[in-house]
Image (cartoon, rainbow, N blue to C red):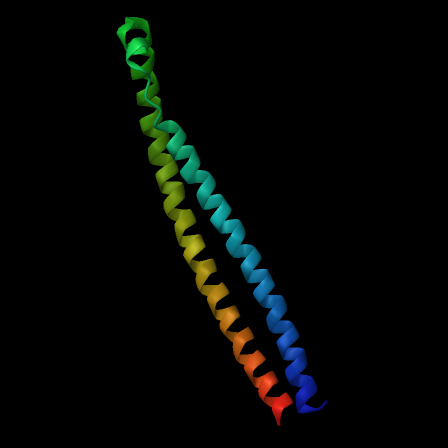
Length: 112
């Protein structure tokens, strides 16, 4: 196999790896965003009229007790997802770099 053919094959493989890493990064980012949205949904505050009613105020206190525990779990999950996202980002950057280097090598071979 000629050097040009090998370079072309390497470039195709690097492109496939880049696509895979980009998809993994997008999935991790979507999961991270979903957790952030669930956290934001827990932070609802009732209006003043609802809080004037004693029953509604008690319901809100019970809800806040539950929401505090849920926030803790979601924040832990968000921290884990953040690590996954950062790992995927690093892998995607590396794959992008490899693809770019191979593209430059391939372009350089065409010019010669």
